[in-house]
Length: 186
Image (tube, rainbow, N blue to C red; front, side):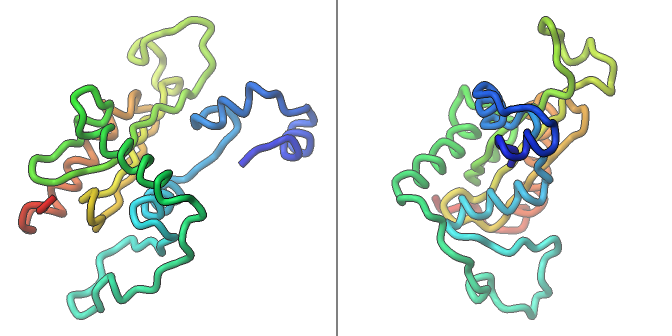
């Protein structure tokens, strides 16, 4: 995470207050990998740090409950619940930007993101920009919201809005994963 020390060391310039706002929404000099976002979403979903798995365990592997849990997150439970409710709302409320990831019978919780690639003097529709200048699309999520079993993070380089490019891909992955499971009881 960039800060004043980073700015002086790397850019040889001071850190300006406005940069804190940009970094807080994922813009500016911040680098995050999809795996780092998956670890973050897993921690929010479970309330503690989790070890990511990139493949499913064999059928003979112990249940997930037998996996050791990492340290609990250092937040009051009501704050964590507020974040979880917000993530649920992004996908399940009518005006949510992640509604393209909604799945009937399963509660997905997630957050869309659109990372600007180039600074624009005036707003230009993403489709009117050269492909290499188009925004990056993100969707970070977990499901089912009440008993998380899967975290999905989608990053589409130069894909435009997360709601249009990344969330539908996540929906397809969830549908495939949950295809053979009974409907979410929540």
